[in-house]
Image (cartoon, rainbow over all chains, first blue to last red; front, side):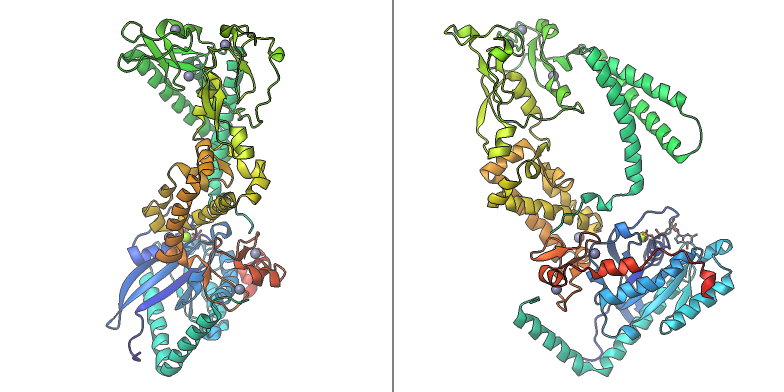
Amino acid sequence: MSGTRRKALLKVIILGDSGVGKTSLMNQYVNRRFSNQYKATIGADFLTKDVMIDDRLVTMQIWDTAGQERFQSLGVAFYRGADCCVLAFDVTNAVSFKSLDSWRDEFLIQASPRDPEHFPFVLLGNKIDMEANRAVSAKRHVTMAQSWCAAKGGMPYYEVSAKEAVNVEAAFQAIARDALARESADTSDFPELENNINLNENNRSSSSGGCNC
Amino acid sequence: MSSVSSDVFFDDEKLQQGADENFVEMEVFDILDQARRENPALTRKEEITIAVNLCKEKLRLLSDSDEKEERTLRQGYLDKLIQLGLEKQTIDDEDGEKEEIVRVRGHSFVIQPIRGRNPTCEVCMTTIWKLMHAWRRCKYCGLRTHDKCTSSVGRMCASSLVTRRDFSLNMNICQEQGLAAQNYRCHECAHPLSFEESSTLEPRLCDYSGLYFCSSCHWNDQMTIPARVLHNLDSEPRPVSRASKQLLAMIDNRPLIPLAAANPMLIKLNSSLKRITRIRSDFLFMKCYFVSCRSARQLRILQYLCRHQHFVESADLYTMSEMRDIVSGKLLEEMEDIHQVFVKHITEECETCKGNAFICELCTDKQIIFPFSDNVSMCCKCLAVYHHKCFELRSRFCPRCERRSKRAPVDIDPNERL
Ligand SMILES: Nc1nc2c(ncn2[C@@H]2O[C@H](COP(=O)(O)OP(=O)(O)OP(=O)(O)O)[C@@H](O)[C@H]2O)c(=O)[nH]1
Ligand SMILES: [Mg+2]
Ligand SMILES: [Zn+2]
Ligand SMILES: [Zn+2]
Ligand SMILES: [Zn+2]
Ligand SMILES: [Zn+2]
Ligand SMILES: [Zn+2]
Ligand SMILES: [Zn+2]
């Protein structure tokens, strides 16, 4: 495997409470469409979008998930192999901010990434078009979100509006660029090791024949 | 494996709307039920008038407050009114353009063309010579009579019987009480019966109802008996009365047979029934995958179920035609084919469905597993799936539930955090 050729597929997962606008963000980014109508997402499904990042064609596979517990997809195998996890909250809804910790934990446990400390998360504060209804004053809000991000290993924070397409394109571009940079860093650091790990894993599963627990 | 109810994925709002519709339906049903009891010869048009009056009265009584409950209820009555109005119009149209429909005992008799074989009139038992006699057929149950005989039909329409809310199939195997219990008379027309040699009085036993009939009301038609197929997997057709035959024909494709509930032992002992039951429980889980999968919706994958759509509504009811196919082995074959298509979509072909799979949290195995995989267990609270052995080893401890319980719904003012 050559050091430069890596999969040009980026898998992005969007998590957050119901109604914060996960589906709207994805639709705005992928289809440039927005609807005021709320339709709860059932289960988890993805859309793809091809983007150019510095002369590279990258396919983004964006998984939209259900915020409502009773509509959440049965299994979350799609967490595995994610390149980035987008946490979303609604700047006019304080509870949705409170839940961020648990969404992050849930992701880390189920996805079990190799290096959880440095796994790329991005925080999106959505609905900034509803400035007047903000749960806290805009300024305090930014501080609060930023300090939470800092406490979680410095994850980037973007304030966006799916409705008015504010910052949505930019945020997802940054997400792609960030995940891509990390990937190439990964491969250039340990190109040999990566191959070995894969080999060993194959050996293990073929010799044990699946779960022997 | 614990079972999951198929409505895990249903919308509350829709359920609420459904409940209100049902409430209106139930009220209408009750008042019509009562009216029918008082006057069994009620025509559908008369029924509609009664129902319309009920809805109008209820609407008058409802306050015009803007409470959500009142609003949906009001909408329920309005919708019903519209529906009734349309139905009345259709009846009027039919009545107007064709020869009128004769309505007797729940039947809707329509004049028939002269083509085809000459049938027997169910009232006077003589042949209907189509070229000479005008004749009618009930558009719901198929009962045939001379035009002049329709008014003397004594038998209730099987179709209106089975649509009654209190309708249930007889699930007891032919409980014959003897002719004396019927005063030596036909159960339907009260014609005298006797076991003595004269053939016109010959009593005929109906295996479905356990009652005796005269030869006019019992033509020795043979039908599979629900109770016998349910309790003994005996699908052998047996003689039944005309009324029973018409009723059984009517319900042949309705899911009314509660196999597992009525006969759990049978399933344990019969390997193909065991497999059928397992596939049906798999179907319920698979439906959970399909409702959140765009490509499954586009492919209309649930249409593969054809006449078995009810398989993804509940886990236990079968139709009579399915019961016969269980006995012949045809149903299992058919189900295996559908199962294969579904499994292939979810576990091989579809990225989305594969994404919604599980990875056992209790071990390091990375293979994806599904609620319908072999050797898995499901947490009955959060529906997480684990390897059966892993789950038992941990005494059925569910880490996902544990996490969810910690995620108590706290309403903390975000300002506190600053
Ligand atoms: N004003 C405003 N409304 C928004 C914005 N984004 C989403 N909404 C509205 O918020 C509601 C919920 O949006 P969704 O995108 O469906 O929320 P979700 O996070 O996908 O919700 P679940 O599928 O239940 O998890 C909808 O009525 C949207 O129209 C935004 O940026 N501004
Ligand atoms: Mg959504
Ligand atoms: Zn009829
Ligand atoms: Zn006749
Ligand atoms: Zn009789
Ligand atoms: Zn699918
Ligand atoms: Zn396991
Ligand atoms: Zn659980």
